[in-house]
Length: 465
Image 1: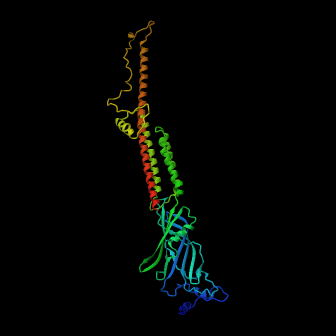
Image 2 (image 1 turned 30 degrees about the vertical axis):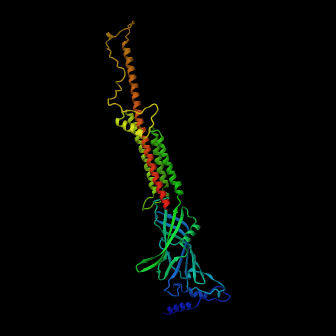
């Protein structure tokens, strides 16, 4: 009861007098300030029904890191806080013209202003002093390493724009005790941050917006200031290290279609290219952000590129099968293949036939001649010795002539068979070439449409940001 009465008497004394000064002593005396320090636990207001107004401003000095997986933004702020201490008042004329002094903040009451998005321990370097002028106006400057939660949207990575929120407000005091307001306009804070922003790395500050509002929870209300910090990623690093190498690999895959289709080296080359692209994705996996909410479009881009390369390999397998498997079996080209592939599709893709070869026409329905039945027919000759004519010297000549004719017939049949095989090979080769040209143009069309869609989407996001 006695201590309460002493506190009341002390407050009453402070209300009646200002801080005292002595002659030859600059500034208020230690004894008069000590009486104020003893009231550290009390809000410095003469009339407790009047709230203490805290003015807040900050300068974003650096963006230290963005962790997409944990949805954490790490920044470094220069925070400035103003409030009025109604007990720290003196007359400069009585105190040798001193209008401002510095005092330890631990001996004074300070508003419990926090940032609601703070999710880590405060490891910032402490600033132990504040400036107090003769009217009781206090300015507290401090550096703050802010680790805050932020809803990061990485779908448009690496051309993404992030909008993170900093909400300043009192932790305990309601609007009846503490009111908060910005010390500077939001435009001035944004301009100062852009001017002093250092060590931003891959992030660029676009704007700082804000508004004041009242947070209501139950019957109590808190005064808060909400800042929206809009930052944009600088995409040069990812364009150089991800998009350009991937585009080069896709270009090499497109140029591989100019390899001869009947060469097995094309399939081997494409398989090596797919293996190299897979290794490239594994190496560059650390540069890609990962969240449980979704996959960035650049990840989809790489997956589709890999799928297109696999489709290209499958096309090569199909063409190789047409050229090698069917031609080696010396099968006739079906009539519908002649009509669809060699006639209509060839005309559609403007296939250029060799100068010494004319486009094939539709053959008649009669069956082709047997290879073995072609050539001149040799009438059978009797092998009876009595019927063999003899020459003047008595030697038989007919068996030798028959054997020679048989050899010539076999040679003619073999040459005719080789010619027929070459014609079948050439015809199947033209079928494979026409299909290869068709699938190559379809592949180019798919890649072009896909590239246009990706570029258009990124351009829209960039223009909207």
